[in-house]
Length: 431
Image (cartoon, rainbow, N blue to C red; front, top):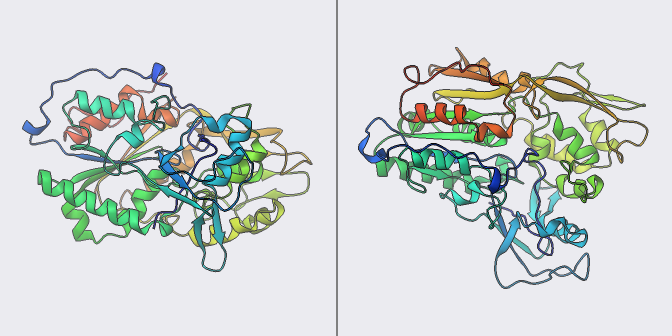
């Protein structure tokens, strides 16, 4: 069941999505190509699952109380919850946090919306909720990729489709969405009489993996042509520890990290994305403070020390959903960026957890996720009958995976069954 998010007097913001969200003025312009998709029997349709914060959400209010008298208490119509740029206003962020927050029940281990708030995911099966995160088309995400494929002959909402979801919730609380995704894939198969490619970006790759791990092999053999994975944090993301400890405003100065932390702690997807015990060395320190160094064996103490005990229960419920990295059972293209300094340890002073980190330790990665975590898809080579292809793009940042021309060309080659022929499985390093 989908539990929702919502808005602040009209508020909405983008924090876990990598910080470089492009405005419409900055979009790369994909090259044009002949439109001949339906005439080309070797092409396959695509269904994309976005990352965390990667699609629009809408809300409707009938609230019993308000955190501020300027917040909306009741709305007759659905309105944008993510993204509504009014959330950047000082009062707006308080309203927005109260609207988008989840209430976690430790007994049932399930989440519910803030009292009096309904949330829905608009446009399932369509691309507009993932192309732009706001109705004014300022915060672009999948637009460049979709337009590239349209220029190559694909058709929006037909041969290239989106599968947006309530990204606040881990898949164990999103059963309705997973059924809708299955129905969408089957509908696309019936329409084109061909299996479908699934594409995920960032956390969306974990959603795709969870989905595939819960399908019979016979179903996957019939309906899924392959899985394209972009920038997947297969071993978790170190950044999540900072998000939950002291908050992360992605460089937006008018948003207090401590205030935005209130919302970021309410999402069960954040504990789900913690660095996994099975993937990281036991002695790797993720958070260093004057009194304690936290490894992946210290999560219970971590949640206690930051006064967020609910986070421990969320992690206990989600830690095994995908951390064992069971092979998906379909052909895989695992693509990610390398060669950029990426934080793998946050160093705090005595103000922890209510102050920002004072220093960092870095390793190789895509500036958001380290290459060790993203490269864990290599484990699948030889673990499943289906091929596993790994492409590392040197110098390519996390969000740029959905924008860069070389990545888009490789995706197009995969969809056109050119991989290994016209496609390049090992692109030249990007500068």
